[in-house]
Image (cartoon, rainbow, N blue to C red; front, side, top):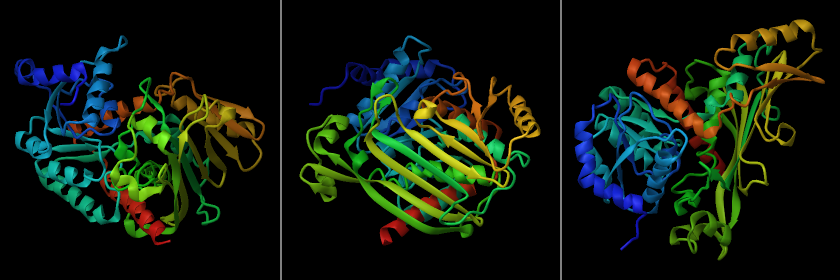
Amino acid sequence: MRILFPFIALAYLCTSCNNKEKAASMTKSPISIITLDPGHFHAALVQKSMYPEVDSNVYVYAAAGNDLDLHLQRIHNYNTRPDHPTHWNEIVYTGNDYLEKMISEKKGNLVMISGNNKYKADHISKSLAAGLHVFADKPMIIQQADFEKLKAAFEIAKQQNVQLYDIMTERYEVTNTLQRIFSMNKKIFGVLEKGTPENPAITKESVHHFYKFVSGNVLVRPQWFMDVKQQGEGLVDVMTHLVDLVQWECFPDQIIDTQNIQIHRSLRWPTKMSLNQFNIITKSNGFPDYLKSSLASDTLLNVYSNGEIIYKLNDVYAKTSVIWNYQAPEGTGDTHYSIMKGSVSHLEIRQGKDENYKPTLYILPQSSIDSNYINEINTLLKSLDQQWPGLTAENVISRIRIKIPAAVQVGHEAHFAQVMEKYLGYLKNKNMPAWEVPNMVAKYYTTTKGLGVAKER
């Protein structure tokens, strides 16, 4: 018999008694969440905040195991934190038939999917076919074989009059948003360059770490997270965010056709993880059998979590790169680098030592800086004051740094609530932009095609 966390045992008890009474007595909110197979910590981050239009009862369907235990522990931590605690009521069903049970019961109307990516395409399609909205963590697919299945899923959503949406948190990182806004101002940025394969017009690089802190605690990774057949390679996982940002910034509010995407070059390489490192982040004692084919030796695992794609999108060359290290140096964390090249200026995001490892946006004019140019920047910043108060421009030698108050930089975990609020607005108002669905299709075409090209090499 497995030993459960005390609160998990209590949750199961509540499922059979108090929770049913509580669910029946509460006024039903328009949106009721179903959490399906929550194997990734992003499933919990969506519930780090409460939402007025979302019922506090959450119906969880999953197989019993450590993934579920860790998910419920995180929700418990949010519910019991001293500062702004949440009050989610997790009603849990466990069993290997969790997907079929969820579909047959349909106790909610919005399925949150953030778990093993091997099964995600099927989970998405079946949830939509059951008439349920789907809020899916990235990536929605991890291989070319599932691309047609994803396209079909959007058709199912249309037929069922429900919405499928993935969680693009990086659009809400303020420097990314400002980079997009500045690039749309011709006096400040000019016109986006076309670039070349050797000198792309836009470059985005993301550095991540297997060992990290989430919500104040060391993150425990599931063993399957290091299996690219279940989690996906770096080219189709974190790369989803970078490709999304390229589309969102270079061609704002425009529909992108997959016929206008050509992969020029794509590469993949492994992060080498020792057995001791693996055991630390998974709290396990050895590699599972399904990872044996990925072992470089008995004590060294190859995780193909790194990759690079150089591609042409609507005649503009872009480069996206993702790198996974085991652990960040002391005082640092995950980092993001980006540059957009315009005819008047380049817009660069750095997050290194000089920036105290905080994302910082620089404007690099391609000619001398005069007062008119500075005034144009200040005018734009002033127009953003209601949304982001306190933004200022600082002249630093041959570049301009945009100073962002700490209160505006809310951090990665807070972005999940921002995406959720945006999605809830789409559900309520039925106003998802016309470009969102075709651009999700274009995004996953790029990542899966990029993986296919890299594997051919």
